[in-house]
Length: 321
Image (cartoon, rainbow, N blue to C red; front, side, top):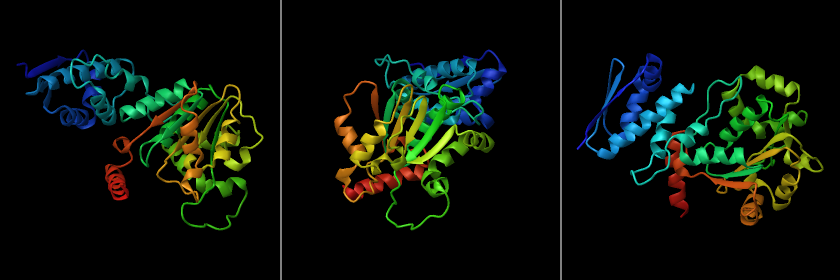
C-alpha cells in the first residue's frame, strides 16, 4: 500500500507559499490530513498509513500550487477549509478546492484576500454573487455579516456599485438604552458598530472615511427606508431577525434597478416581543421558491470567530433542547 508521496516544486516562490510563515501551513496540513510532512530543498514529502490520506494530500497540493500560480497566498484558514471540502473518497468526483478559490474575495485597497473558512461560507459567497437578493441565516460568529461586508466592499471599490447602504432595525437586546444624543448618524452608530468593525478589519480607516465623505457609504435606520428606491446600490440589512413582517416587506420593495441586497440574521436571537412576528422567519416561509433570491444557512460548525464560541453555542443549544 502506498504510504509515501513526494512533490517536487518548480521554484522557491511556490515552496514558500505552500509552507507558509515558519512552516505553519505544513503543520496545519498534517493536522487536517493525519500524517507527517517534511520539506527538504524544493521537495515536500508526506507519509501516511491511510491511502485516502495520500490521495487527499495529492489533491490538496495540486490545488495549492494552482492557487499560488494564480497569484494567491494560501493561509492556514484556507488550507483548513480546503481539507474540509475535499471528497472523502475517490467515488466523489467533485473538483475539490475550486469552490474555495472561486469564492475568494479580493477587495481593492484591502488588507488581505478574504477566504471562506468552511464549505457553507463558500456557498454563501457564491449565492451573493449570483443572486440579486441573498439571505443568510446562522448563529453568532459564523461570518455572515463579515462576508457580506467583504463582498459589498469588493463590489463598491471595484466600481460595480455606486453606493453601499447599511441598515438594521433599531431594537435593543434586552435593555433600554434611553435617549441617545447627537444627529441621526450618531444615534444609529452604536447599532451599526458591528458593521464598522468588519469594515475596519478589511480596509484602511482613511478609505472608509473618504467613502463616507463622498456618501459612497450611507447608514440609515430601517424605518427611514420607506419611500426610497435604491438603484445601483449594495444594500446590507443586518440583524434581520428583529424586523417585523411589514418592515421586511417594505425593505425588499425598496431594492431598485441594478441593486443587490444581502439580509443577515440569527433566528435564535429574536428580540421582538413575539418571535412569530419576525420578518426574517416570515420571509423564509414565503419567499424560498422565488428565482433570483437565495437562502444560505450557516451552522455551529461554521463558527469562525473563536473556537470557544462554537462550544458556547452548542451548550446553549443543548440546554434549550
